[in-house]
Image 1 (cartoon, helix red, strand yellow):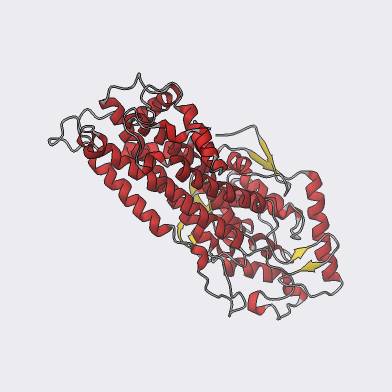
Image 2: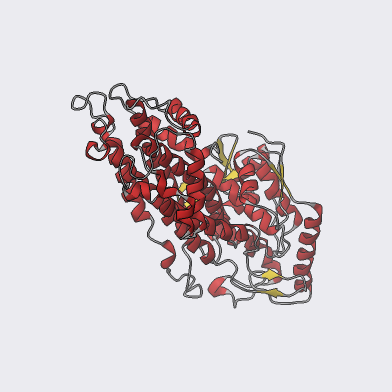
Length: 501
């Protein structure tokens, strides 16, 4: 889908919503002229230092443990070329195109800040590749998340010089052919440019931004699924009282409760304390506390990514005063910890959702037809979708182990602490997708329970509207049928559509 929106890459104002416009909605990207002026000034600082005979890490020295080896002037360009070739060693399945686009947008935005010494035409080629749909093939594994996301970013950068592989208009081509078909010409790298292209956190951050946008939709769907389950089971709304929640004033608890009170407004299926029972089980009664805590995690991660999106993360950094200083901005620890936190928060949306699904299908807990079957015994109904939810929740528990607590030294112990942040980001996305599937199963079960209770006219207008969307993808079961494809389709709907915002 092509958008008329233009996303400006100025190194200061990019956010996750603008990235999504460029990644999924075809928005073009552009570096404003004022920022190109800063890019040119940064490039001139590098060239002046070289003319003055200064020794600069990664410009006229080797890399990592080899940083004390000076490079002859005539070999400086070859050094940058060698760097891309040596570092493009990723393995595993390629990252999805939206992730690659997010990486490219983020790297261009970081370079546009004017602290990296990139040539203007190199940056603009990266921008043109985004706008014309030249997408490097980037293997998903091979980054330790410090010294930058070297391997994945090298697979992006090597296409700029006409090497590597890229997807263009649905075909996988050599980098040179992909550029040619798009009407673009490769660049010749000069001092520092190879390092400027690959030394950063844009793989973990790219996965992180796309995942966070998906997680927001999953969290909202979890809140809605909880509403429909409450209506199916005649849940007690009293536990969501605003005055009650105010005595433990975590704001996210009230956000969840307020959202659910609004969505449940007008429902004839919701009960109050003592009308049907005194208390609900924790998976119903504690929704504000559990879902709210997951939204706390979401908010923390959003704040970390907001900063990282507009950060310069390479090394060395070329300051506006002309100094060129080697630091550690490439280290992924801030994002690694954040993405590990998102893993836990998203896993909990699924964890409690599966428990609500169990309450729906278990006749001893729900009072409904066993496993929500039309003809129990002859039919299994929705018995085994709960198994699938249980398997996904169990898988999430393994994936939620923090990647950031591990570190394996690299580069002959020069790089002796690494973040593993890209692993954490990939795991977070896997958990978010698994959680979407678990919540889809809860929605299908709640839909079936409401169907069996003939309660469609008793539920709230807001939940009825969403129920209709669920049933367009997975209608109620009149008898046993295979619903695997419909479960997955509903999960993808949750991940992609903003109908609850």
